[in-house]
Image (tube, rainbow, N blue to C red; front, side, top):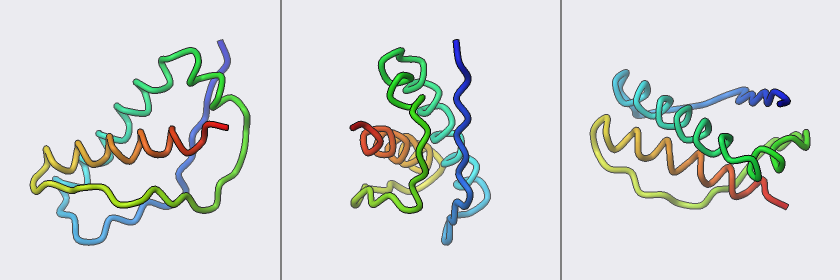
Length: 85
């Protein structure tokens, strides 16, 4: 099995408290791990490419750390969908 290295150079989370930032990042991590556990999705991600900007559209954000975690998961799913050919 090959390794996938995902680098997010900058993640700007203005307006989020420390707890919400941590929850959002955990949502990103856990959803990326879930997406990449799928062999078909892994094959798509194995093609190396650089994407300076992704426009993901609007996504709802609920208050609190649980809302931030869900938001992080939504962002990860949107990124995964946008990288498919």
